[in-house]
Length: 63
Image (cartoon, rainbow, N blue to C red; front, top):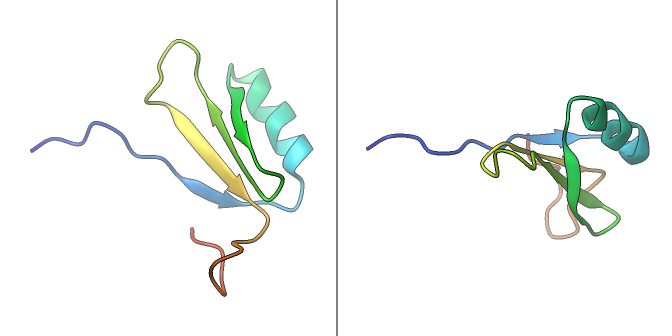
């Protein structure tokens, strides 16, 4: 078995700033629900990072 994708979850209280910074690295917003946002690489769909302000279904934000 080989790992094909690992997607980190990052806690952030600065969602727009996180999106802007990762945009400089080539990432684009692919999903945004306000409290959770995923950015992805347009040239490599397996390269993604997710940002969360809180998790509506859990007492803590996963890291």
